[in-house]
Image (cartoon, rainbow, N blue to C red; front, side):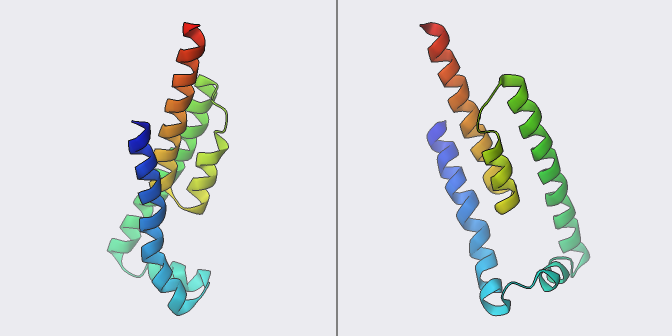
Length: 110
């Protein structure tokens, strides 16, 4: 599963930026224009509302689950969430959680 999560991390990083890069190349870093463009239609606003709620839910889940299992490096998926989004944060968190689980299983078996 770790290899799958790693591939999903890569895709979750690259694919969103392939969509953003042409816009940035054309308009530069203009946060107000980006927000206006992102919310230009009701369908776009719907999609962004879904993404934002998913991101908040993901942040809460990362913090609560990390605390519950005593996982270190819990801040990495939160950083990924802020810098890229759920597309990277979720597979990265699952990868780190699996690594944590495997390390604990190896330690407890000795």
